[in-house]
Image 1 (tube, rainbow, N blue to C red):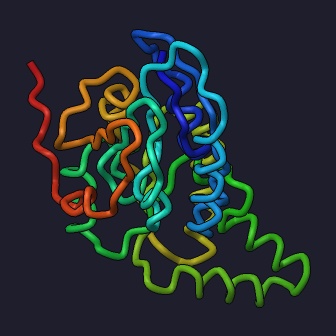
Image 2 (image 1 turned 180 degrees about the vertical axis):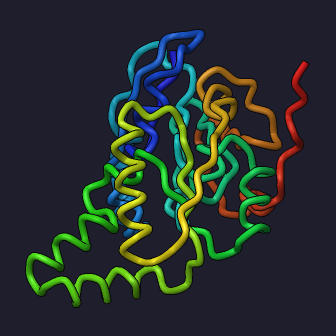
Length: 230
């Protein structure tokens, strides 16, 4: 059995997969991404909990996440981590496609259905400020938050409430006057996350009692080889 410790942002994408072996999930609040040290503390706490009997490895549904994983120590079983700095390449399906999107437009703000269901999204922040300070202030705040971006890219992942979340992405696009583009994704990397193979170009395997080093992610920004389809 595998224990999957994953960010809530990919809950729906992971739960819809059909694993080859038994899994147990523990989902971590995506809001902790804003505070890497708090995220690290939460992951330390989860790793210190009793591991279910029969667990052969712990698999992280996280990237390096602002350094939050750096310094974590594997318990008495291996840790498996996708070799990414954040989860967008993982959700898109490859670093190749992620790199292509950034080559097209470096100032890309990525969205998925899961990101729009977080505790504090850009839209919830807009509505919060509008309720307290009015429309003008709310628009100014949200425009400032996206000041360095030039487009919004919504990645379709088969999220069960994708239609509603896409409508929210369109609302956000209109509010900040940024073009909205939509692209599909591949679930292959997530499937490999729960079933393997954990090949070295896409995954890091940390042996029992070893510590995760940030240096392990040194080439995480390099595109992984394209997957050849038969």
